[in-house]
Length: 112
Image (cartoon, rainbow, N blue to C red; front, top):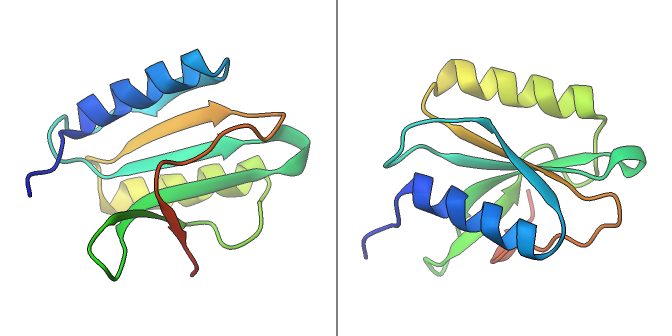
């Protein structure tokens, strides 16, 4: 099965967030076709969680809590993303401001 281009996935997320009343921005633009997508959800006082795209054992699309099972401070999330960008300069970062914890991902969330 052919995957949707990353740029199109990001555009869809931006529209989805706008429709839900959430502020979302592209914090880093990567390869338009196949760059890895990271989603940083900033819940301000409640901390940040960075999710990365993954594949579930059954082959379906899923998400992995890249910064661990509990939210981290924004600085820690940003440092994690900066380290990842050193390894993969083609990655994308979509940042979502979610102070009321309304945001929902579109797939399974895998435990680390």
